[in-house]
Image 1 (cartoon, rainbow, N blue to C red):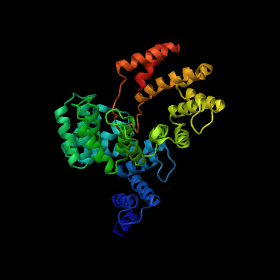
Image 2 (cartoon, rainbow, N blue to C red):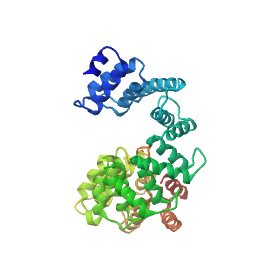
Image 3 (tube, helix red, strand yellow):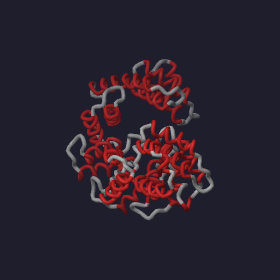
Image 4 (tube, rainbow, N blue to C red):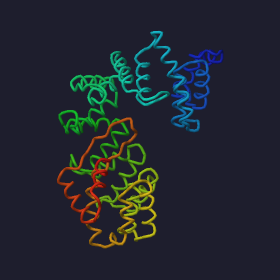
Length: 381
C-alpha cells in the first residue's frame, strides 16, 4: 500500500519497487501488465533499473510484443543512467555486473569485452556471485585477458558457495571436457548431476546428451530421456529427442518424426534427418520420395551441404548397398554435431579424431565428394 501511494505520487523508486512486486509476485498476485505499467512510469522519470527491466520485457516478449529495436532503445537509456550513477560514485556490485553484461552482450551499446571484463572484475571484488562467475570464466578461458586457471577456479568455487548455478554448471562441463583444466570426468559428472537434479534446465540438456551419446559414460537411454524431459523445450532438445527415438531400445518413429518436424524450421539437421527417413523408409513408416525431396530441399536451402549432396545424387543414394555405407558415414558424422544453445554458455567442445577423419575422407572420396566440404563440416562442429 505504501509503495502504491508513493508510486501514484510519482516517486520513481516506489514505482520501480511496486513494479518488482508485480513482476515477481512478491506479496501480491503476479501481474505482468501492472509490472510493465509501473516499470515504464519509473523509466520515464529516469530510473535506469526500470529502463533495464522494460528492455528485458521487450527482448523476451513478456506481456508486450517482442521487439529488439525497442529493447535496445531502453537498454541505451539504462546504460546512460548506470554510467551516470558510476560517475557519482554510486555504483555497487550489482551495477558493475549489469554494466559488464551490457558491454559483453551489446545491450544498448557495442560489444566491448575489455570494458565488460573490467566491470565483472569490479563486481567480483565486491563479492557479487554473478561477477565472480563471469570474471572467473574469463580468467579460465583466457580469450580476452591472460589465463589464470588457479585464480579462476577459486573465483568459480566462491561463486558456487554463493549458490551461482551457472558457475557450478560451467565448472562441471570444464572438468568433463578437460579443455582448460585437468580432466576429472567423475567429479564433473557428479557436479553436473547435482545441477540437473536441482532443476537447472541447461544442465539437464547437457546431461541428457551425455547419456545419449555414450562417449564418456556408458550409454543409458533411460537416463537420457529422463534428463531431456526436464530440459528446456527448444530446437536442440527436440532434435536430440528425435535421434533418441530412432534408437532400437527407444524406437518410436512417429515420435522421432514429430520432434524433427517441430524443430525443422530452426535446425537444418532435423530437416535433413526427415529427408533421410522418408527416402530410405523405416519400420512402421513407408518410403515417400516426394516428401524426402521436400525435406532435403529445405535443409539444403538452409545451408546444409549434405542435404544438397543427397539431392544431387538421389538415384545413387537409393541404392541399398550404397545407402548402408551412407548410413554408416552419417552415423559417425552425427557424433560431432554440436549445438551453440543460448549463446550465454559454452558447450563441451568435441573434435573428430584422426582415425574417424581418415575413415570419413575415404568414404567421401568413394562418393566423389570434395575434401574441403568435409573440412568445413568439421570446423562447424
